[in-house]
Image (cartoon, rainbow, N blue to C red):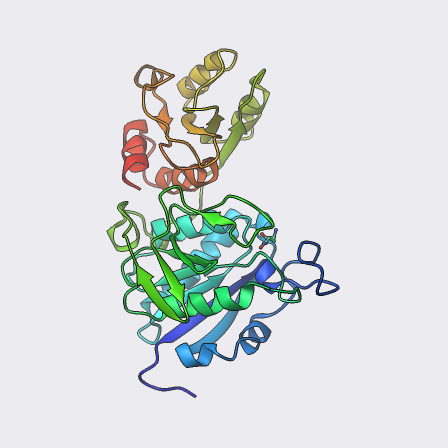
Length: 334
Ligand SMILES: NC(=O)CC[C@H](N)C(=O)O
């Protein structure tokens, strides 16, 4: 029943394991993602109605490894429309966990609202023993409906933690404690109540210079992974396929093999932006002019952003500028 005192929370469903179904309760890892519709998901957690007036909308029904830039834009535009509505107090997005961190960071950059936006998934399908989706969704609605969550950027609620959508990453599959941030969670949500401990320091949402309403399309940005004995095949192929920027997934401090350096210098001269990130576990901590002379090569560093998050920021940034110095500024600020 609708009441004036409860917040209005919209759940936008996109698929993933939180909407997954397996053959038996023992199937925690073997199942089909994106099977269950949003109305059924909401009906499965009647306690949601104690937290908020909840309404669901099926935006897509996919496993998140298959998300496209067009899907991202479609979701981003719908979030912006709803955030503009005075009948909406908070937005929850159910999402597959594989690319959840990318979508959360994208929305964190482009949504001009201080209303809570919470992205949530699960590691086990609803049909499994000890399924985690119900509680994760309950926590997401609790946070999205709370006043304290306003203005804190896009959030992710998994495993009782409130994480910043900018920082959080799927660090482990299978485990329900899959999502971690190198800088720690922002808070906890327990029995529908949130407990906050820190705030994001980077620019986001209201304070961002990017706006989904001004983004018509996203440019082609590719990722090339580095390792011992790497050659330049992948970098050249990405450039040939029209990449405007290449995220170099370097070793350690985003270092670049001497076998690849001349190609990356040449690609930059041809107009391709080269952005150095790292493949160390948490995304690393890549500093300018350490390991490689970025000033001389006119390259950019991704700093603490992992490669997939660096790709998101590069795409969004390139809708505004083609200048590598501006790009670098954005990589420090977001
Ligand atoms: N745990 C999950 O959500 C993974 C399922 C699927 N690969 C997806 O990302 O949608």
